[in-house]
Length: 216
Image (cartoon, rainbow, N blue to C red):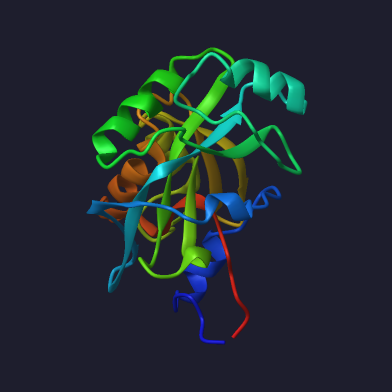
């Protein structure tokens, strides 16, 4: 089988999955928006993303969430299908009940969900290809970076990043794992990763994500 997308080695390393999330088969039949989103994988490589208008990814504020609690929290929102099946209910992919053609509507839903105190983060689901349901790219409200030690010390870089609405989770071997402190739109990780990359202080800066990596 051909690879989904030929990413650089640094990109593959950067896209480490920090938890297990199984994408349900029911969520594969997705409508995609016309607009493209981009993030810079390297100086010479950009990743183009197509947003789904029928899916949203949700991470709850609590560390341990049962299926009943997840359904109870989400039942407040008529636009979400609460018939959820997942291995881990702390972080779930959900389908939007209605047929939505405009992603502006989905983005309004993201803002509404991110106002909920019981939800840490509601983020968009993207696809790398219009024709491949396995090319999903689920945005997580986290950013993975490696500072350029020739330009900035790690401590100074962490201070810089934390002033951009990020909070350090872990730093090791001049690589950093941040989470977004205040999620409002759901796009913060993508926007901040791009901003940090464009600063020139890093060797790479990626939004964390869930995606299918095929061996090749």
